[in-house]
Image (cartoon, rainbow, N blue to C red; front, side, top):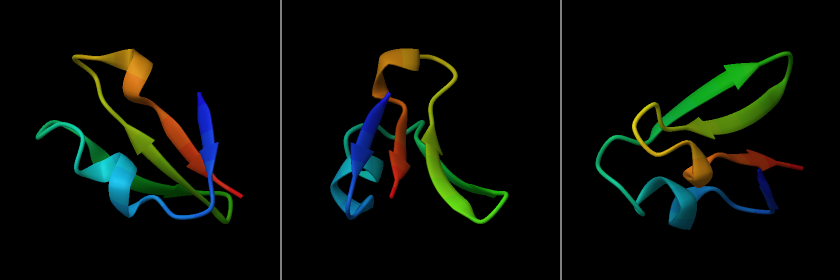
Length: 41
């Protein structure tokens, strides 16, 4: 999982990427390509 300051570029890598907020953190998840996961912070 990549840790990034801004998730805008991580979200646009694939059309299946979704932004999710969990416990105050922001995550990018992708069910079809799990290697594209990212988290902010």
